Image (cartoon, rainbow, N blue to C red; front, side):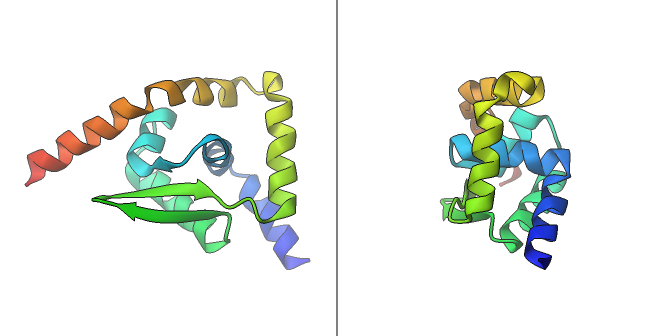
Length: 119
């Protein structure tokens, strides 16, 4: 019962839910998620850490970036997200986020430029 309660607490946060919907569509790095959602890196990283700790996302390091993907092994998560995706017309914020996936590369490129300027 605790796992189910924690699951719904996790989904009750708009930012975490938006991240989950994005990751349902494709693997993304923190820079891309920040750009798509127009949120700060610390805020996005905090939410991703919670999602990872609960086992809902997995991460992989590729060069200097960490990419996140949704872990769809949990049937409740998979069914819940699928239900949202099936009714996307009812959720304009999610639709806008998904549309911004088309320009995700610009956010990754900006992050690479920022990293180079720090060196």
